[in-house]
Image (cartoon, rainbow, N blue to C red; front, side):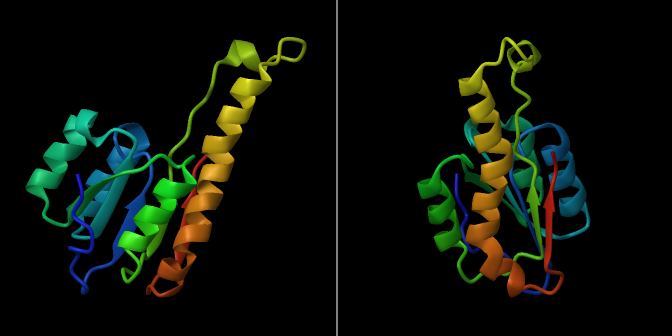
Length: 146
């Protein structure tokens, strides 16, 4: 599902990772309600029915497939929106992992590495890839939840 570069140039733009549910979806709904261009990303847009409904009713909402752990997907998304200023880069994608695997003496290092890759490195990948877009915008904001 892609509508690359279909945004109006006269409205601010927000890019939200993990926009399929929870806070990411709520942010997408709020920004769309204020008339912003919303670039909503998630790993499985086909399963994000509420987000799809939002895009159908709000023409300034674009949904893109994105796994923030994939250098290739992040680079492809950035290339597709190369000329689009991003006023707010909202890094929301994240996971908790299982608490039982995070206890000292029972640490699951593979699980911890996955949490770190998504929550920390995923945000850094996005910042690195979209820094020119944020720099070209009016508001120049990067927000990372976690």
